[in-house]
Length: 135
Image 1: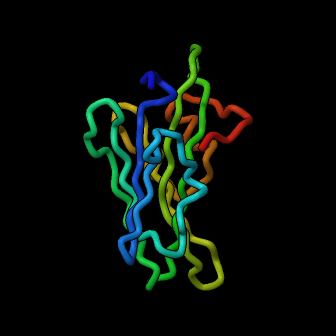
Image 2 (image 1 turned 180 degrees about the vertical axis):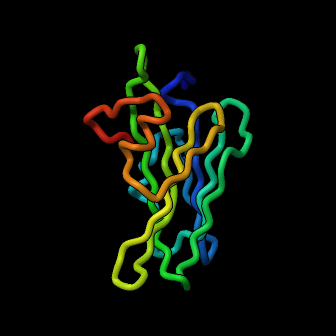
Image 3 (image 1 turned 90 degrees about the vertical axis):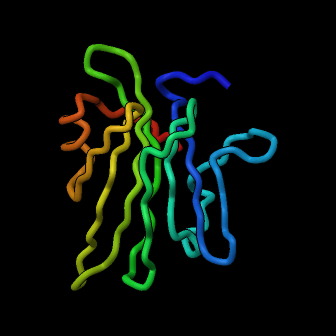
């Protein structure tokens, strides 16, 4: 596997009853974050693929009504090139309103947190969205 700007991270999801799912299966095939069992997950760990260091841990508390948000997208950097950004967070309904926290994790380990829309965050980071979602 080649590590580049679009393939820099790995993730693992952990949960109740020994639940575990990683970005790669035993045959090194990629697993989509869409396959995470969102009813059982209690934490998602994002690690740097090259050296295994932990970049971010997102805990989920279902007793508070928190639901996992997890996806990766490829963005175009201002000035050229592409960059894959991992986003993990949670959402819950409070007083009839959807409340969410999104954490945008960059390859260098920088994390940008937001409860607002994606476009405001990626503009600050200096990226433009590519039309295709990338898990």
